[in-house]
Amino acid sequence: MPNKLIKKDNLVDKLTVNLLIYPHVLATGITLPVEMLLAGEAFARRYDKSVLKLTTQFLSESSVSIKSRAGITMVADITLDGESSVTSTLPDIIIVPSLWRNPRPVLKSHQKLVAWLKQCWQQGSTLIGVGTGVCFLAESGLLDNHSATTHWHYVDQFKRDYPQVDLKPDFFITQSERIYCAASLNALADIIVHLIAQHYGKAAAQNVERNFSHEIRKPYEEQRYLEGSGDRHADELIAEIQFWLRTNLNTELTLTEIAEQFGMSQRSFTRRFKVATGVRATQYWQQLRIETAKELLSSSNLTIQEIADQVGYQDQGHLTRLFKQYLSLTPKAYRAMVRKKLFS
Image 1 (cartoon, rainbow, N blue to C red):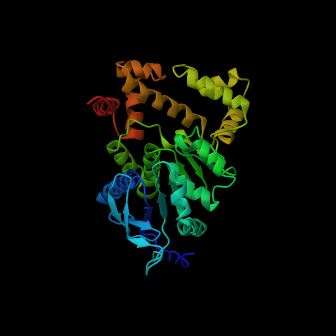
Image 2: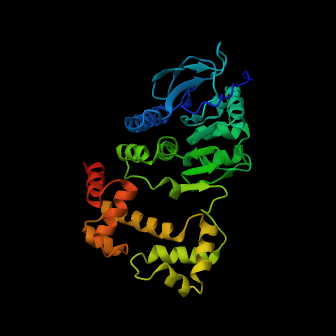
Image 3: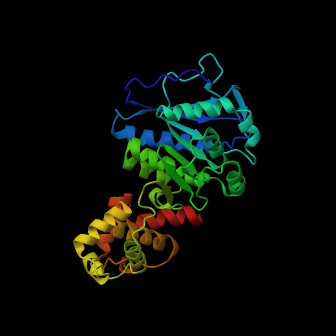
């Protein structure tokens, strides 16, 4: 077992991220989050010099030098069996990257690392497992009776090895308390954008997202499975209304009129929608329209006015104002950025 970790002494000016390295690790699962986090910190620091100081460290169980699947040699900043067997402060975030093919041999030879992960989580660290790296978290027992996901290629084996885990193979991202699981590298990127927003603000997250394939993925909130959230709910009438809203974006009816169509008063509808989904109906309605507009801008040749009409905004200027508010871009600029990245 590693030595006892030293908890943070109320330091709020630092963000410490540890990235695990071990044989056959996929280097992209290490380099991409580091580059994104650094970009988020740099953007935020331009406007506020007091933002969290980012510290990233590579950590391995015993070997200082580790060769990745691609043959890239990485050097650990920390080893669990070295003189400084643990960091001086508890890491805020630990990223457990994916391995190439079968992870079981590496897991068997890294039980000290598995125990260290459990200890860190118990003392407050946030854990992010990626692809087959999720097996490290499952091996620790932290995922028992909790939701998780993993790379599609390893789903069947994962189910056999960890039957106590509530595997969600249809989700690219799961979130359970302070444990995130990502099924792919793109899903990891979405989690990192989400964490940048939490620690460095929405503007920094949007800037990183624009520079790391903004157009390819759905929003983090739309593709995760969050335990205890409104992503899945039992209110069948609200679910029926949600389906109606998704398929009638260009309706001229107000939400009050739509609720009346389903036999509900505005007050009852507003309350039940928030209880069932966790968001206000107006927020949900607006986000649906924005996401559909984004898809039409990237995949069709419709004019911006035509797109505004299709998503229920007769005034093109209204759509433009919403894009500026949520994406810091006009619809025209968003389309130009998407087309350049997708087709150039």
